[in-house]
Amino acid sequence: MQVTSGATGVNDQGTVVGASLVSCPTCTPKQTPSHAFRSQSGQLTDLGTLGGKSSAAKSINNNGWIVGWAHTTVNASHAALWKPGSAAQDLGTMGGPTSIAWGINKKNQIVGQSDVPSPGRFHAFLWQNGSFTDLGLLPGGDWSVAQ
Image (cartoon, rainbow, N blue to C red):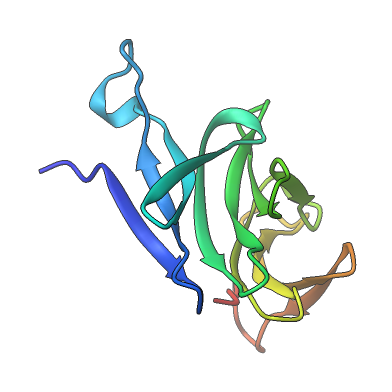
């Protein structure tokens, strides 16, 4: 059974976010892209990508700000922010090729994980006011995630 959509977050107003497969007549099932969505009052809205193939929403706060990840034009996965009425905003990375946002609070502070310049290293982050704070690793750890 192939999953075609999944919900990953809901706010106090009942707005749901997640990801859903989108039409791709030339794609094999494993290549079919997904797009982040917002479902409000029974209306499903495609949130798009950062110019690439796929995206997924992970969390929404009561301000209607949505976070997750989206592919860029070079098919890298970057943490993404969707504000009401705006296209996806690329939050960037902490020096490596990929990042993902997992959660957002009422102060619009975002948490997630990002590659750092050391290959294969993910660090947890806090993103606020346009910049990352690297939350680092526990002693002896290879990677950390803020979810």
